[in-house]
Every structure is written in structure tokens, then in C-alpha cells.
Image (cartoon, rainbow over all chains, first blue to last red):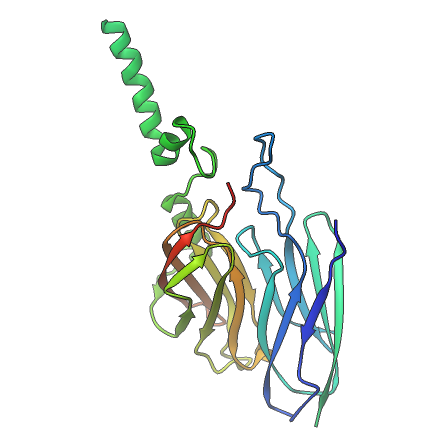
Amino acid sequence: MAKVKARVKVPKSVKKGEIFEVKSLISHKMESGQRKGKDGKKIPRQIINKFVCAYNGKDVFSSDWRGAVSANPYMAFHLKAVDSGSLDFTWTDDSGDVFKKSAKIKVT
Amino acid sequence: MYNEMTTFRVSRRDVLSYGSAGLLAAAGVGLFGAAAKADKKTTMDALAKVTSGRTAKSGRITLELPHIAENGNTVPLTVEVDSPMTDADHVKTVHIFAEENPLPEVASFHFSPANGIAKASTRMRLAKTQNVIAVAEMSDGSIFQASTEVKVTIGGCGG
């Protein structure tokens, strides 16, 4: 499989207590398991089925994905600024491959 | 002659019992094939699994989707649930269903009070024009449901 590229977007700094948006994008073909190949057989499902975001080590948002999530899945959600630290994103796909990306956040 | 009629009747009944997807497959033009038919019953089953006997209330959910999606492969979706998002009262999970997709379950978003607001966006595949349903599970066990129709020009489940 082609190299998986993950991107996340978080504000550089936020005020304490402020609610900010977190955006994430990962390159993945998200083979749904519904398509048929040239031989007429179904192409087996190969998708990212789990997305987790941890804020300073604590899981704050997660999502279960099924075949109907688009290729190169995009996920946006919100977080409340508590402390400066790191946001760790983890994507897990059907074959058990884990993709990770981290971002720093400064809370003033 | 009579035998022929019987044979015809049986096969016709068989085809009918498989529903429209069976008909399409029999005609050799099934978009998803016979096994992956779009079925409202599977959607209802999937919904029932989430609600597990609880009655869904309406309201509190805002479901943002385009009225017309030109490309069913990437339909943007934003769901927001009105909630204070405190430890005592927050949204636990929001499930997204696409009624007429071969597999109705799309995604589940698991929120926590750390989110501040229960709002999430993603992009989904829609096979054809249909209702998209959001079901929100609250921390107190209550369930809310909302749905909105999306018209799809080109289906997004491959063929």
C-alpha cells in the first residue's frame, strides 16, 4: 500500500477554557468491500475502522468507521482547552496497521 | 405447458422474494450484486441495536448535509447535538446511518465532556438518494434521533 500520510490541524495557542476545532485527514483508499474487481469478485474490505484522539494521554474523542466513510477520511471535532500539551491521533485499519500523528497545543 | 408455467412461477417468486436487488442481479445489472442489497430492514435492525428498546426523541440534533450531492463518494456531513457537555450531562455517542446504503452503518462518534461541544464532521459515501439518520445517546441513557434527505446524482459505492 502506498505510504499513508496523516495531517492534523490544531490552533498553535488557545485561551484556557476556549473550545477549539481539531481537523484531521489521512490518506487511505478505504476499500469498502462493496466494489468488484475485473474478475467479478468482490475486493475485500480494507478500511481504517478506528480513530482515536488523546489529549495529554487521555482519550477524549474516538470514532468507529465502517465502509461508508469516504476515501482519505476527514474527521473534525472540538476540544476544550485545559492544559498545554500534546494531542495524539491514532488510526487503526483492518489489517491491524496503526498510523500515528501528534500535535502540540499551547494553552494560555 | 403446465410444467413450464410452474417452473416460471417458482423462479419468479424466488426473484420477488429477494426484492428489487434480486431482480437487478437476475437481469445482470446489479450495482452492488445480490448479496449487498439496499434494505430498509437492515437499517431498522441496526437502529434497534443502538436504541435497544428505548424510544428515540426528536430534537437537539442538527444534521448538516447538502440537499443535493453531485458525487456520492464524498458527501460532507456535520452533526451537532445540543448539550452542556458536563460530566453529569453529556453526549456519549452519535451514530450515523445511511438508510439505503448496502451497509447502513456509516460511523459512530464517541464524545466526552472534554469536547466542550458535541460537534463532529466527516465525509461519507452514499449509494443513492436517501435519508441519513443520526442517533445520539446521552449520558442519562436517553436517545435522540434526526434525519435528513440527500439527493445523490452519482452513487458512491463502486460497481
